[in-house]
Amino acid sequence: MQNERIRPLKYLPAITTAAALMLIAAGLWAGEARDVWQKAVSICLSCIGIG
Image (cartoon, rainbow, N blue to C red; front, side):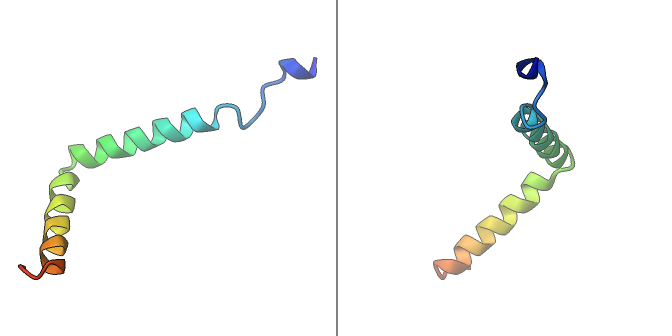
């Protein structure tokens, strides 16, 4: 009977992955990807001495 019990951590990876995908989708929908990209380009250009 113990093998039939649902282990609490069995679904944790699926729940975590689903939550991450929902947050990524929300960020993309809100236009955050553009802001992150602009900041990344600015930082990279500063590191190589162009910006």
